[in-house]
Image (cartoon, one colour):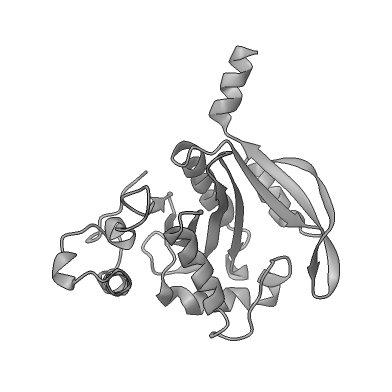
Length: 234
């Protein structure tokens, strides 16, 4: 994992705001976190790890979602183009706190990872990607993502998800990552296929959305290291 220097790529003001937020959340005095790295500060008390996995690609910074991101999350999850094929939507900023709590609890309870997809300089918020419902016994998780429409078609989703899947297989030691895609959403299915996911079938009438039953297409990707080992031992 490529590390991010707190005094480097991230803006000082944004870093200070995020550190202050987590200092208050965890009851850490300011004088005690001056010399703590950005990622260690964010997840100092997370079970089973010493830092939140801040990831980078050529164009992207994948960092932890913090409370200050609520306006971005509200704008995304209230946008009709984004929520057309998404499981949740919100009509007010206040209601969006439910989603922020979901992101925070995923980290604090160690049931997954969720990243804000941002420009490399952390100045532009593009969207969110997750590895959620982490089952440590069976070493599997589910994935999901959303982007603001103005950033569609630029390869950001593919770039972010490839990095996240690499982290999931190599750092979280997942055997399997799955994804569910609503019928009528070929763009998301195409991104999954480009990242190596395979279609496994359709879950018919498995959810109710806006009062109607919907079908979900099931896709999954296996840990390529395990696949290679299985082929060698066959």
